Amino acid sequence: MIISTCLFIFIIGAMLGSFFNVCIHRLPRGEGLMFPGSHCPYCNNPIKPWENIPILGYIFLKGRCSHCKEKISGRYIAVEALTGILYLGLFLRFGLTVDFFYFLFFTSVLVVITFIDFEHFLILDKITYPSMVIGLIACLIKRNLIDGVLGLLVGAGIIYLIVVVSAIVLKMINHPCKDEGGMGLGDVKLAGVMGVFLGWKFVLVALFMACLFGSIVGMILILSGLKKRTDYIPFGPYLAMGSLVVVLWGERILGWYVGLLGI
Image (tube, one colour):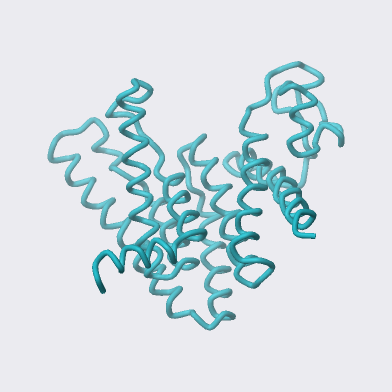
C-alpha cells in the first residue's frame, strides 16, 4: 500500500512539474498559462498528448522536437523529476496531513521561482505577492498568524539589510556591479514568503543554509572558471534550497544547534 501511494504521489508531482514548466517558460514573457496550448518554442508545432507525458515524453522524443528536431531543454525533464521527488519527500516527512499540503504549495512556488531565476535572473512579483497572501491566510487558519507575520518581517528584513549594506560596500570598493547591488528586491520578497511559511525561527535557519550553499557553489564556479567574480549569480535558488532543507530537516538541525550551544 505504501509503495503504491508513494508512486501515486511521485506521478502527481511529475504531472504538476509539467505545468510548472509552462509557468517557468511563459510567466517571464508575460504569456497566458492556458492559451495557446503546449507547443514547440522553436517551430510552434502543437505538442501531441503522448509527447506531453511527464518524464517519459522527453525520453521517447530523445530530447528533441518531433517536428523540427530542435533540442528540447533538459530543464523540462529536470523540473518534472525534481517536483516528483520533492513531493515524495514531503509525503514521507509529513504523511497525508495538513502540513503536507501546506508545504506542498510552498515547495511548488519554490520550484517555479528557482528555475525562472536561473534562466532570467528574475523573481516575479506576480508569484511572490500572491504566495505571501495565501501563506498568511493559511497561517490564520492554522492559528499561527503571529509567527507568519514575524517570519515575513524577519526574512524580508534580513535580506533587505544585506541588499542595502552590499550596495554600499560595492560602491565603496568601486566594484563593477556597484550599480546593480549585491542582490535584488526579488530576493527580499522571496525571503518574506519563506518567513511566512517557515516562521521566524526556521527562516533564520533557512537563510543561514542559503548563504552557506550560495558561498560553496559560488566558490566552486569561480575556481572552476565557469564564473568570474564580477558575474551575477542568482541567489533565489539558494534561498529555495535553504527552505527545502528546513522543511524536511529543520527541526533536527535546530535541535542539533541548540544542543551544541547547550541551551
